[in-house]
Image (tube, rainbow, N blue to C red):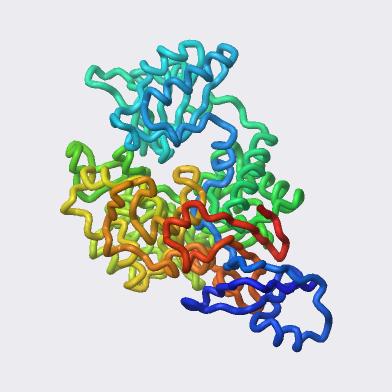
Length: 531
């Protein structure tokens, strides 16, 4: 069916301020763009349907370059702690859940963030014991690099004072050596055997919820990392196939392949960019370090507010290089979680020793804490930095005290990276941060908290233009997953994936992005969401 999309403002994103009057689509592709009258004159056949944009604003489909799509769905199904402003509020929510749940049932929650509370105190096992003594409790911090567990939960996982720290993880202890209930990074994996089994329907339901929610925010796709968290690789991949392809929840899911499941993936005959037009495989995912919130991001220098630690290396330096080498054996690029500057340095060392081949580009995810020499090395390499603009909103001002104000010049330096020609893509890391791309675009342009009455800007010299910010979620995301030839802009031969907004963000006050409605989301030429 030939559809003509017209009577609105259509930004191609080929270059700044470039617009066209109309788009003609067929079989999920853009087959013509330009002036409406000229397209109609060129047609040898009639148009089957005219989509009247009614003055609304059309962009190439927004794509989140780094998220956990099943995790997004889970947050819609579990105890959501992300909006709570105090420890007491979290504890009250857990108690309320315990009061209405049969004894022995797990209480699972997600999203607590002590840096957003009036008093920045973490949750302890003893506090959870008092309000839920008969329920095992597991609450993931917003960063998902720290988990709070009560004593019954630790007992079910057979974790006690004699349990050693696993490689790349920390079981936090108090001054007397007793467990506090906080598990950091790889130590969280010790809880997995004790948790209730995950059923296929649970995974599929979470994915279904995640896709629908993504549509409502204007997302036509996402680069998602889920394949190692829900049992074996096959069942999770099968969920993507069933929900997206068989059920018709159309979404461009680019799946990063965690190194823990890479052998299963390879044995089943998959390869980089294999799959379908909706569900395809991307780079091999590796974690190099933790997060700033729990002081597990790996730094070159000690933390300014806790000089006893420089963070946590998830893998030894040699093991990290071995993993990169393994990816090259499978003819894959890598996508590495690197928040701290020392972790970033280690990954650059590995890339330089084992460079990507066949025109592939490696991805460094987050890239928050950098130094001049690391940026200069990155300029010479085929890499893409997956940045999360909303981290500025969440991490400032406390991150300045954590790292040290005198060490902030090259941190969260998105404008510097783009000006130096380093490719960047825009993501949310949802559910760690809110999924909405408009929120990420707002953060990239303003670098301030939406609810700050004083409108404090953190790093004014690093603010992006609105065009640059939108490009992160269109052209940037397409380039990051090697689809710059068929996604990310409005052009003949490109995918008919569109995000349609009620108002023109270029003509509105920037804060309008915070409440602006997505009116339609279009994937493969099909309207999958309409407000």
